[in-house]
Image (cartoon, rainbow, N blue to C red; front, side, top):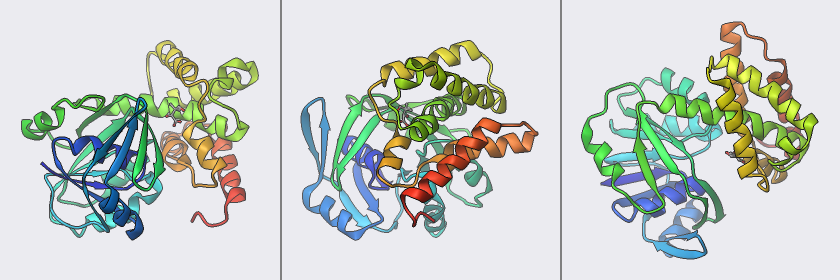
Length: 299
Ligand code: PAF
């Protein structure tokens, strides 16, 4: 297939590098220098100590018609990308954002494109404009946003590539909600407290704060199986005990965080249902202040 990847961040480079094993890939970047670098050097993927080189096309901006476009930009850059995609002929577009705020934007987007949603369960770190380190091997689960999917693209994407499976599921919303729950429990607190993920369960005061976020999120999302979900959150803290969460890394590096995609979405849902969420509101406001303190030019 001809696949376009929008975004040259860690997930964009990771998808481009693996999918290039079976498909013709074009990476669309925001900066021209990054596209030039990818064209000149290809994409270098580092996985389990090995380095794999991938040849792809790359250009700044977004143009053309593809069998599939995969949008990997962070939520805070999505609106810009949707405006550009609105000018393209109808095609299939798979969105791979963290959090769930993008679902609200996609629901309101008047478009003839066929939309898909995916959940990325890989760990990846961008090393340079053309290099990505695959730090945690997971899968991508994806499904059709508003329509019944026909078999062709399902089968093509399900073609197995070692370390990079794309699994079709009609249950994508539940998968997204469970990931959101993990993210809202771990990311804001680690960013505000400046601690690694494991600290949240090692320190009883931090763990208590995490249960407050958990209770509010579970009620806003009307999730059942609370006990299983709490054990799941704790197990992710254990497995990633020595990691800095992505939100903490964003704060440390002076970047905009994904607070709107993660907590912002939950607060909108809470408001619509008349549910009070005092802890999430406090986390959201505190992160906003912290972001402004770190850098003056986010918005
Ligand atoms: O965003 C992150 O950092 C990760 O999704 C997770 C699972 C919270 C671990 O750090």
